[in-house]
Image (cartoon, rainbow, N blue to C red; front, side, top):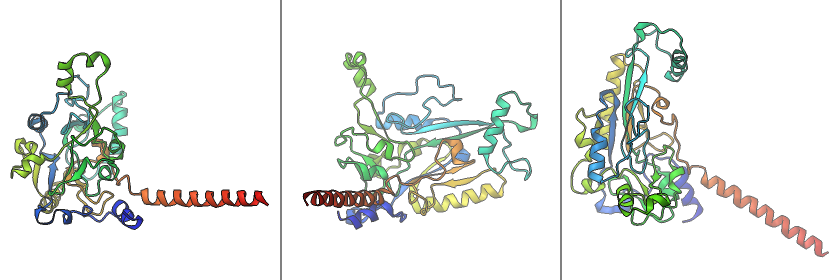
Length: 328
């Protein structure tokens, strides 16, 4: 691949996955994804259970975290769906006066309340619940850095790991701007002495993540998490149709006075070219543990390589000049 093509693939955010769907020809399918409407999430965790059952993911989150009813805390190699519970002492609806410009600022006020500041009764408490998942980015840095081709984009426009090819290098783990990818680390020596324990944990050092139920998609079925969601908080379908539905939903909530209602990762012009899994949030992304303005982490690689090549060229000229000058 020449430098110009590399730069286009890594640096440009076009809102369209690189080389997709052209590489699949007649086998290409419409791009599909998730729209997660957190305003109707009830925190039942049916999505977590369905995901684990269908994909045969090892159990985790068995230790009390102290984070409300959130036992898994974040996405990982054995948590492909994560339901977050965020407790807030803020009004549910806006009255135009008491709601701050940003709930990041409200978090500072809430810290004062935790330290003993007197709280008025009318503030109340609300729970924000959200089912997080791999974003299946339009411009996915994990694809750019994978040295074995284990990560690939499917005919549906989703991003999948082929575990039989993954060598466990872990390059994709820090490349993900959302911290989605993780390895199932090898167990320690004591644990490894028990073959039953190793098999039960599934620990093997390779990277695992949501596949958007690729096997179900090929069979014409929706992903297990969306199928199990009782409130349709997790909606599956063609991405363009989901974006239209999301626009109408957020507009309705804003008209009804819901505080902080906004779409996250639905914009094809954002730093990752939009996501295949996007969200309707009721507060700032930071409150949910999400980056406010994510960018594809390989965006600056072409410039870095150019700068490195220029520095090497200058160094080579200097060394050659010193060598030739010394001979005189």
